[in-house]
Image (tube, rainbow, N blue to C red):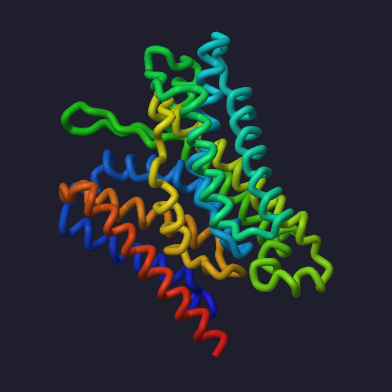
Length: 325
């Protein structure tokens, strides 16, 4: 059957096997507290991964999204504090717009000057972080100053479980936001002309142009959407941890890229799926969570993430060469 040979099926099988193995080594893995924590950890990195997936399918690599996310969340929260504004919808719209504008800046440079996306996004990530810290400072907006409505929004749970020791654990409702965005992304990529143009552009930009696709519009769609998703991810992050730190997300770009590549996306473009990315994100978060349960130092966790990127990329390259042969 076709599904048995799909990348997503193989990744899902590996994920299930890994979960069983980790559960046998450390039974605490199956505790509600750990499983709910895993789900919560998927939300922010997962939403950013959807943006990176879009970029990677188009043949680029974007390392600026964590910087855009922290800029959006910090600017919005600081503005809310200064203006004494307490709400939810308007801040999320503002953060999404900030992310979109920053993504548009990436698109402008990449499309106008025909520059390599990785180089452009490295530069814009550095610029945005530098300007954020230089102009707004590095002070943390802690829970005492955070807008109460934003905190209340982040506290919403879908399910709450009472443990034997009296402690209660909740499955955050932010998972629904993540899954909703994932479904929307899947529908766009699979059933719309702009989605098909992203795949076509990533496979061969010149062929896509000759086939009649508006490649300029494709580039703008990809990077603006990725930026918008980063802005939303930033606001969800700050609402769930109840503080705004301008130094958050440092190094997260590697985790996001690792998750997308692990989910079967090709760094050469033209290949990738939302389902594969969801599985890749869960697998990466699960591995990092298991290392924490096993009390592995954070330094070695970075080593593991690096190994995942190299291994997954090598497998992707081998798969692509094999299909071309």
